[in-house]
Image (cartoon, rainbow, N blue to C red):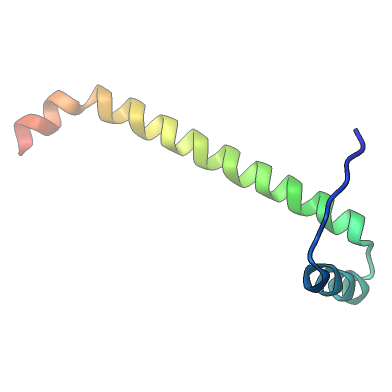
Length: 66
């Protein structure tokens, strides 16, 4: 899917400089950033889900230990 991304001038310049330093394209860097974000937030969501499940599972015991 194609999309447009509008960056501020300072963001564009910083991204361009970093891409040049790393020998890659701005496009490749943005794709990697999206992939990193999706992986990180998926992991965070899994941890939150597991924590809620475990809190519910052990809530009676935790209440008795208070």
